[in-house]
Length: 100
Image (cartoon, rainbow, N blue to C red; front, side, top):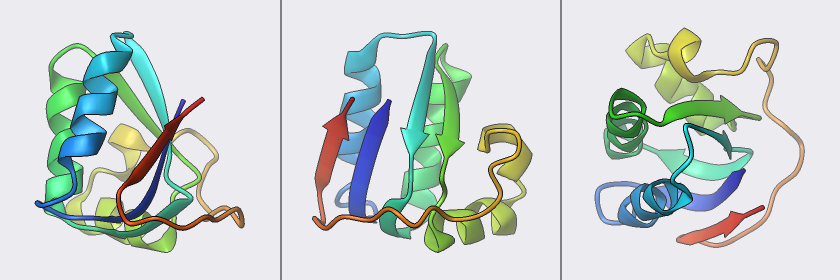
């Protein structure tokens, strides 16, 4: 499972892309509870990795991630079943990623 934290835009999504790539797993769960901002660059990483052999599942979406998924019609593609509300867990860091 990956735990991205902070804001993700074109300048910061590289760390997420690299972490998913390093995982080398057919399925990866991304806990987005601590993502404070996510734009289309964040979504692009999820889509590209999901389209190229790694099934990406988003769990505990923050409000920012949930808005992005809803606005782009990708909620059902990425959101884990039954995971509709943001999680209460949070942490800080603009470009921090923790694997667990």
